Length: 538
Image 1 (cartoon, rainbow, N blue to C red):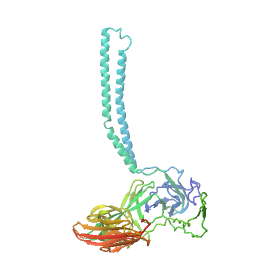
Image 2: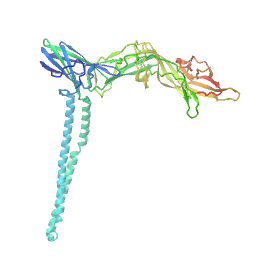
Image 3: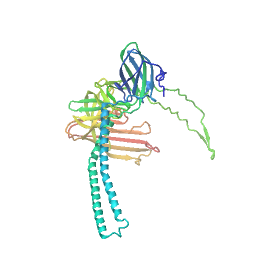
Image 4: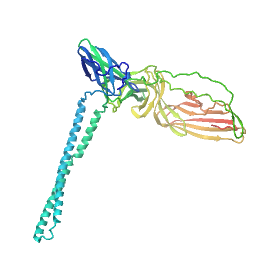
């Protein structure tokens, strides 16, 4: 036995109490985090005057006793005793649906046993007939047959033939009866497999349970309640979104939902459910920072034992400081909670319950973005939004995408803080194409450049609109950049880009183009790199 709380000082049954009262304590509420949950069990009780012990025997064996907090209404609470091992026997009465499923399995098992017993009885006749046939064959080989008269042999032969025929018919009839009896066996076995599956569906809970006993004292007959709360790591919820873009209205509807699951070993039935963005399992304090001592020393001289050369050691590299993982950051600046309006059932180890939370409506600026590559590629439909909802839109590992009512795919989406902006994408625009072709390229010495190497490129970007509508398109391409003065990079573009170092990305160029149906737009981009002789371009 492990004693898991400092206040546990008494063994079970160490004091004479007026009455032991065993209470059922199903889960009544749960606050679920993205990793973990706080479980609440509210247990009504009724006690006469005096000292008593309120006993709970249905907590999962994995319950984190250190995190248990308990309140007792209407009585004075005394010592609390808990066990996860060597627990007393508990009431094992089963729920009606479990009893019904077990009865169905047992009835089918007995029915199959009866069919097999009747088939085995029918085959007894087959065995008996085989014995008769064997006996008749041995009778024909008995001693004295050679000296028997012809009439006796004829009569014996007739008798053996008749009896053998009767035995063969009996064997055949027995086998027919056995097969007829077994015809329904396959269907019964299928029904039994279904019944066992149905039983497993209503009994996924593990059998191991913990024991908790709270000593209480009541001055008079009292009706009160125990409220028990504790933390478990065996539950989670994951945000899921449906993003519905209405291009004509310029609106984006974000239907927010959640997938909830748990592996606590007991099922939650009709519980009050709260979803929280708090992260109690994450780092709770900043990392430690230590003083950084620097010093200088004489260089170390190494001697080669063979050649006797003196080699000065290379300058010592700076010590590497390994940063600890930073605490998780809640971009909204506060914890968001979602209280589901109706009771929820979540079966342990089985259910993945999807809940619909709410719908946010945001204005959306429709655009397209095309990124230059080698060859032809499609532009992608985008929606620029500002999160005006006043709360964080949580990240989702799988957001379903809809455009004008049609499903187009799914993607992962990142968090959008309150009042922040974001670009969301809804797949390729098939008729909006960007083609990048390299028209002229040279590399290395050109003969008349005597003291430098050079690399150059001229690329043509062609944007074509084969759709029946006008588009605002952002075209992206890039030129290299350098931080060394010896590596000279120059570039020219016609037309000039609207943005250089787009989104603070060095060398990324952006053109904002309006293109009508059937139109074509061209961009010419030239770039040249020059570096000194004897150097290698990386």
